[in-house]
Image (tube, rainbow, N blue to C red; front, side, top):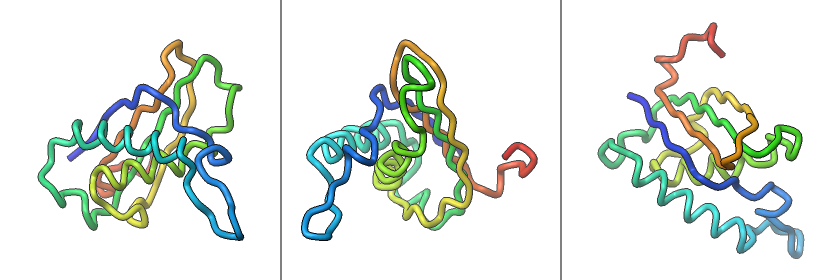
Length: 126
């Protein structure tokens, strides 16, 4: 089984989604707002019964779209995206065994998400 969706906004970067206060990390209001909206998109796109994705070994592919590929570091947007995806589909992200991350130029910013059972992934494609 596969899951795919598009979130029509980019997540805030790690520096904008998380902060430190008193030596403890917290999620900013901007991070919380994006994550909540992304979770709703993921939940609405999920066609599997509750618990379907739980405890499966997963492969996740993320493609980030923005006006130019040089506008941002791709890694700074991954954590919040993966957290929203995991919460939206109901799995623990420790079960993600492989990830493919890309960024592409597009007039429409956002992130395309593809999830599949890791057993279905051809190792030569990674």
